[in-house]
Length: 141
Image 1 (cartoon, rainbow, N blue to C red):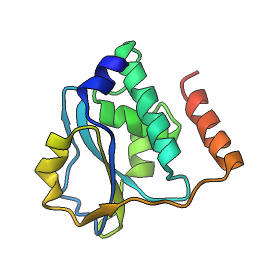
Image 2: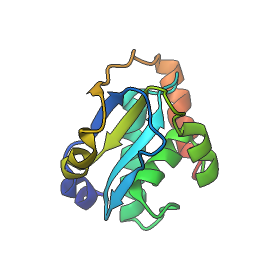
Image 3: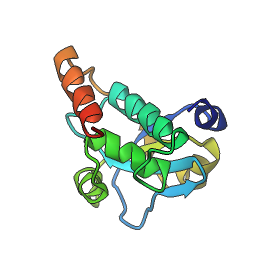
Image 4: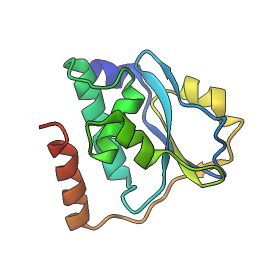
């Protein structure tokens, strides 16, 4: 896991306005730019835990998805089904959405097309956070 984490810069999480369906996720090696909805489960803790789990799966060759970005979505959604994760987390046209990336280079390629700002979600209650983290773990048993 350390190799993937070291290869990437720190995780970039931005809130963007008005999703355009022509905007597509990008993946190059272990670097990615992924998009997801903003909902009541969206928290920095969940996103960071999902990224650490996705990176760990790739390092240990336990990944389900071919890209680390989609693996991240699997953990955020708390499922091992790619179709279900994409359906649950894909933003709709015109909705505000999150841009998540582990690469300044890849993020830079699309950032000019985004109206992005800092993502500052309300803190999730400890109980809700524990339930979401438990769901994340149970999705791989």
